[in-house]
Amino acid sequence: MTERTEIPVEFRCIVTLGIDFDGPSHEVGRGIAPLGIHSWGRYSARSGIPRHMEMLSRHGVPCTFFVPGYDARCHPDTVRAIDAAGFEVAAHGYLHEAWDLEEAEESRLLHQTDDILRDLLGKPVLGWRSPSGRKTQNTMRVLKSLGYIYDSSDKDYDLPYRLRFGGGKDDWMVELPNNTYSLDDFPFYKFSYTPPSEVLAQWQSEFDAVYASDRFFVLTVHPRSGWGSGTPARTRILDQMIGYMRSHEGVHFFSSAQFARWCLDHPQQLEEVTIP
Image 1 (cartoon, rainbow, N blue to C red):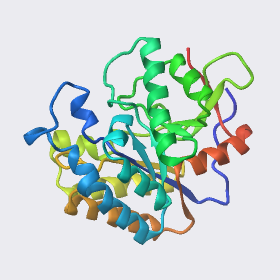
Image 2: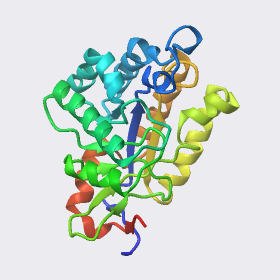
Image 3: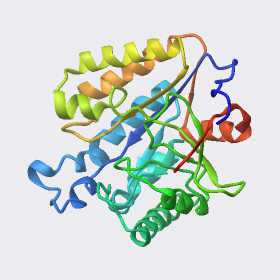
């Protein structure tokens, strides 16, 4: 392991925003028809994502949309609109898989989603976030073979690092860990039913601590209704959170791919961790 990761001094604090599409794939992958009470995921493309894009564009900040292949197939115009607005599109499983996969099946689904997104965007996809947090050395090998430069799935650190998955010189990718407990809307809105105003206070408290110490802030939200941030009041909280961060001196917003490229250019400044 190298020395502790160092955020460059020219960046007082780095912020990456991630929006996990989580459309009807979330239900379909579990054998549930995305209708009636289970239609929350359909809200993403119809209302949540357009509302988020308008708000992000107003702030002029980059963002990465992590999109399952099934959702991209169902809503190709939405995916194209995300890209046309200047935001990054990254991969997020095919059916938002929350179950273990055999290597061959996992490889097939990773390739399938990549094919769908590449065809829609007309350019390579550079990043991936596990829809359930599950991944293996096989996952990383396939992503690397597809040309991906980063993963944003792990929960084990406050800073980016090099994630090594083999013995070869190039058998590593940039890991941009994301805290899906206190810097994610899902646990607050799905389990504790926390009022939006209290979610904002929690996120601001986390940001204040990060700004004063590690200086790398990753926030994840979902545009669904129900337990997501796509509805007006909850989108307003994200709007206010972005405004709060922008009010601090030296805060720089990056898409995940933008900052991963910086990490690739400065690998000596990153710790290295090996998948056992």
